[in-house]
Image 1 (cartoon, rainbow, N blue to C red):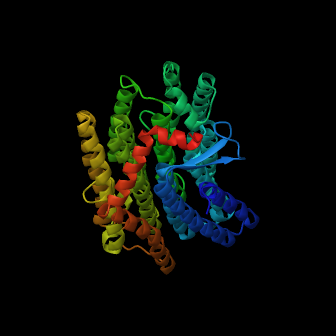
Image 2: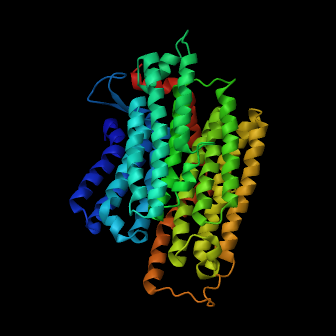
Image 3: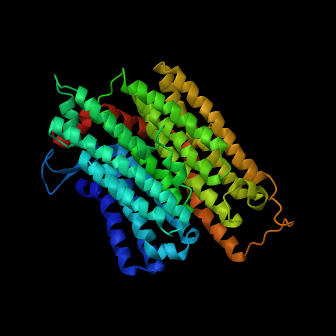
Length: 504
C-alpha cells in the first residue's frame, strides 16, 4: 500500500463509515454493522501507519499534488501515528460498550455517524501539516462532540453542552486571532515552513512569541489546563457513559498533542518566560484537579476532575522540554487515554446495576462482582502511578527528567499529587466496592433482572480488553517507552519534520 493512501486512510475510513450510516437512519442494527466494520478497519489502518513511520520515517502526502508549502499537507510521524493508534483502540472499546450500554433512541438518531465523524476529526488534527487546517479539523471534532453531548436532549446534557460550546467558541476565536497574527508575520500557514522561517538567522521572534500566547490560551482551554478547566467537570458527567468515556479519554489529550506539536516545531520557547509559565501552569493544573477530585462524591465527577490533574503531568514534560521529558509526556498521554476511558466504562457498568453514580448510594460491588472490582483496582492503580502499572513509567520518566533538569519543585508537586490521587481512588474503592449496599427503604435486597445481568456481563468485554492492554503496557513497557523516546527525538529534531515535508 502506498504511503499516500496510508496517511489518508485514518481520515477516509471514518468519513465513509459515517456516510454509509446515513441511509439507515432510525435503524440501529445496520448502523452498528457499518460502524463496527469501520472501527476494525480504522484500527488496521492505524497499525499499518505506525509500522510505516517506525520503519521508514515520516510520511506525507499533498492533497491535489500541490507542493508544500502551498498545498494542503497531511503528514504522519511517530507521535501522530501513536495518537491515532490509541484513539482506534478506545474507539473500538467504546463501540462495543455502546451496543448494550446506550439506549435505542440515541443509537438510531445519529450516535454512530457522529462518533465516526468525531474520530475523523481526531485523525485530522493529528495528521494535518497546516496550522489553519489544524483549526478546521478541531472544529470538525468539536461540532461532533457538541452533538454527542446533547444527544438525548436531557436538561443536564443541554446545560453541560451550552457550557462546553460557549467556552470553546471563545477558544476558537483566540486561535483564529493567533493564526492571523502568524500568517501576517510569516506569510505561511504550513507547519514545516513556519518551523523553517522562525529558525532562520536574524528572525524576529518577539511578535511570533506574542502570537504563541493566543495558541497557549486557545488550546489550553481545549486541554483544560489551569485556570481554563472549569468547563470540563461541568460537562463530562452529563451524557451517557458510551459518549462521555470516549470524549473524556481523548479530547483533552488531543489538545495537549497540539500544544506539544506547536511548541516544539513552530514556537521557540523563551526560557525566561514561556517555560517557567508552563511549569507553573503544570503544577497548578495537577494540584487543583486532584483537590477537586478529592472533594467530590460522584463517581464520574471524581474521574472528570482527575482528567484535569493528569493534564498537568502531560504539560510538565513540555515545560521541562528535554527529550526524556517529552518522551514521558508522550507515554503518559497514551497510557492516560486507555486508563481514563476504562475507568469511565467501569463507572458505567457499576451505574447500570445501581442506577446512580453517587458514591453514597453505591456499595457491595466487591462481593457481587469481584472480577469488576479487580478490573477497577488495576485501572485505578495505573492512574495513580503505582509500580509496576503503566502510569508509573510515565511519571518515572517525567520525574527523572525534572531531577536531571533541576526542576525539583515540579517533581515534588507531581509526587504529592500522586498520593492524593491514591486517596481519591481509595474513596471510590471503599464507597462503591467494599462497603455494604446502603439500606433502601429498609431492605437490603436489590432486584436485578436476568437481562440486566446479561447486559452487565457483556459490558465487561470492552473493560477487559482495555484492562489487558493497560496491564501489558505496565508489565512490558519497553516497546512503548522506546516508541515514546523515538517520538520525542523526532519532535526535538525539527529538521526531520521540516525536511520530510518540504522535500529538502
